Length: 287
Ligand SMILES: Nc1ncnc2c1ncn2[C@@H]1O[C@H](COP(=O)(O)OP(=O)(O)OP(=O)(O)O)[C@@H](O)[C@H]1O
Ligand SMILES: [Mg+2]
Image 1 (cartoon, rainbow, N blue to C red):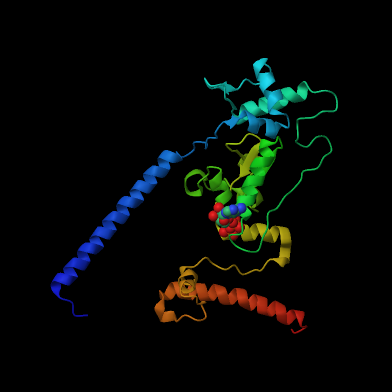
Image 2 (cartoon, rainbow, N blue to C red):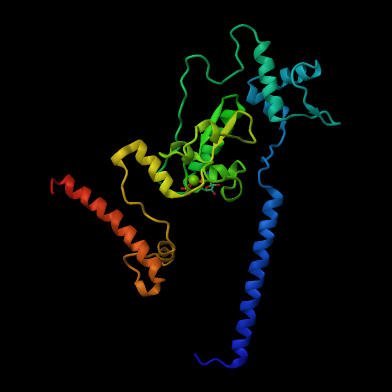
């Protein structure tokens, strides 16, 4: 292209400016995140107002207020205007107090007892962005706040449930500290109990996830055997770049992409689809 030198110079100045600003923004964001979520620091939790605590405990606000006035059970923080609030730990203390002082037949402890089985709940939907993680997080926290003991197991490669509970995979979760450590088939395997972490909610513990898809595939295969495809699809910028123009990998041209990126994506995509094609042919009784 034949650009006048002064235009070229202006463009290069703009380039420099953008690069400089991007760097600055990135540094600021990193710093902000370190301040908000210092590595290894547990995410905090707000205090709960008396009416909320009454709801989570299954008593009336009036009853809870009376207990507080009589100095019974966990004593809440009281503002000068008389508003009472409890930490989540104080709420658990109160639950235990209520249970021990309840009339026969009345129970405030909600978690499973005796021969009650461990209830597994999976939040599943084929559609992306349909609220799975949001539902799972709210359900886990609600069950914990109402006195159930909850173990949240993050199986999502995006690790958003871990992030919600203050565990940033790249900061807080090291090698062999995820679910994978407990399900791998080599000498690095660890008991699940070593992987479990407390969260900012009492009663709610978490098995974090860190990402790599291969680990999830190994896990799924160990559970579902040959009902899981052998060939994994890679996460590839070639796919997402093609999608920006509403195209698939089969529609775009190789020369529009970095060769190696395109080739890797296409190879993986073909392998997955060939495997499915073979399964279809097998279902038709073909060899
Ligand atoms: N009831 C709701 N009301 C409003 N927004 C919601 C609701 N539930 C979820 N969202 C929002 O919808 C978006 C997608 O939700 P979420 O991340 O939970 O979906 P997902 O099924 O886990 O997605 P993915 O398939 O990407 O894992 C989020 O921005 C979330 O805050
Ligand atoms: Mg999700």
